[in-house]
Length: 147
Length: 81
Image (cartoon, rainbow over all chains, first blue to last red; front, side, top):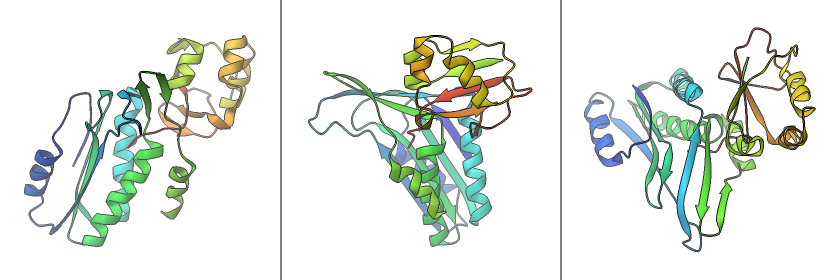
């Protein structure tokens, strides 16, 4: 079980290998990695991710606890970066381990849906033309209704 | 109490945090007090539907009580993931 909020880069491959090695009895491991997307015209200089340090860890641990209450999970990993990210940088990852494939998939989707709109992070896209805060999407809010 | 601001709320106010003396008992009342201060605050709090708030690091609705709270936060809808 781990929730990590960090500025430093991480390697999703290495993290997944370690997570999988620790989940020997589970049988099913699902992971998702979020990658910084370039602007459509390739103009992204960097993405700035701001967060609410006093709240972030607690909010992510609550999201993990909610997932564990709903699915039989053997382990959960959540990593989310803040600070300056360039196109192709890994922003975040989640991994779930369970004896049941469906539980591992569903819990990973649940974690992602809640991370999108209930974890205190804000993204700002900085291009040559200026900087804009990324707006939340209605569909991200609606995605919570299915749970 | 401490009031903290994030993302464009922070930018519009030009302020990340401040100490506020208030008699407000709910977030809504606190917003009304802050918005009445000057143009910058009025602008930052002009559309409550575009804002979210947390009391002592818990996400709450605007009608939530702030009695006894030590920190209230205002920010736009979150964009994690």
